Amino acid sequence: MHATDQQSDATTAPETDVGVDDLSPSAKLVYKVLEYEGPMTQEEIAAESRLCPRTVRYALGKLEHHGTVTSRVNLEDARQSIYRLVD
Image (cartoon, rainbow, N blue to C red; front, side):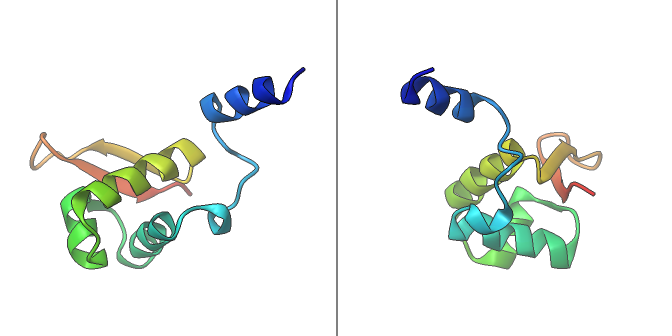
């Protein structure tokens, strides 16, 4: 197996062996906001963390790929998702 083969496999599979400490600073901040505040929408996370919505969206994508965060539809507003930490 070539090094490029290993790299492509790592980008498609969830990164279960990587800890939160190995993620970007924005992903760590989003993780901590969810840890302290509980389930929130992307808009609420952006307001609480003072990160721009695009950065929050990117961080949530990384955390979901990492398997640390899950999302589900907000029952009060189906246009939004609620994000929560995985137990």
